[in-house]
Length: 479
Image: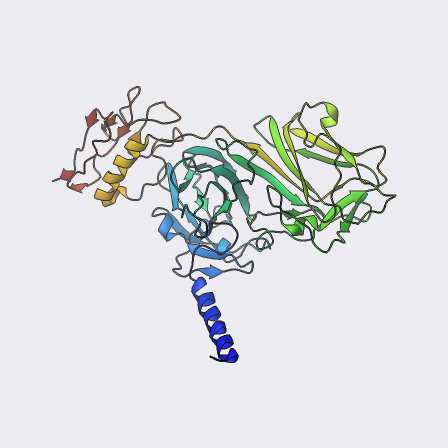
């Protein structure tokens, strides 16, 4: 075969595989799992946005809720088409998306351990009530946070956590007030490398509060960030601001450090003729906040120049452990990450001072920073034998198949036909019973309400529920 024919064949194969990849849900990026769900979209075909992110409809992941159209937001860091639909949940105390991810990377068979999940909300007055709702977010049987919305702005929440068992991710929306109907606009799942955020113990989730790239004029996310983290720009700066934007002169920046920040956030920085002060007030219910700070020198220093600074937390009123303990010296052409952990908030405020050392000829700089809080220890979830038996019941009766998420956790947001004991880590099922449409709950029991559901058929073998004591299947016709 001639060289020209070989080249034509290779080009044809490239085009074929390129077209084929358009129909894959998993995007071929460094993340093993890269799933973007357009909530409320009824489209059966994936769609690629301007950031090369492939979006799919939410039909395969949830069977409850109502679809609504809304005028799409014009915020540039979000796709307006994705934000033009939402799914609302006027019934049930919680409704859950269930995502069964491919738990092995195709290339090396390594397991997916830690994931970033982002939930996006754009109310846009879809119900003509001009009353943005408040509701609770949950994941894998754990509390996430209370979600508060505005009428015309996009709200998004992020959590990073390790998968404790299996490969299922459940994201639930729980109603807290009768007139506040939960809704969601988009749901995203990104797997992380095993060393990403690994200084947080695997039994605890991280809830991100803020992520900022200094000196940039636009938001940075995928494809610049392979994990698709959203880095907001800082500014604009006024003409009287003491801060200065500086762009790196390095032809390339090595970002091969544990949390792998995108090179784009290290190409610009803020500096000043004096020290830099990072001060924030946060409406937090926890006393501690944690930060990751990223540094990279923007100019190649000569022998007479030195940039060196200390990190001082809350004007030395805090006993936080700062790593590294020595002064920070930003490297040229490389990235340096500093963990500033266990920062105490005083009246919801805290401050981080980047203080020039005595021998430094140049002022401090900062390229990017992340704020997060560490949540409570992850729950194990409802006893796995009981969950498996419930799964058999769901497979046998179509009326039960649209219930997702942990049946018991977090309390009190159990399934409507389930009541659980007070074990907040791994509850057991001890009863299937109901009386007059209300739960009859006894201590150390879990109750399943199966009356009046119109169940018809043969009961499966759910003997794995070895703590089961009572069954009530009134007004059903099992054969």
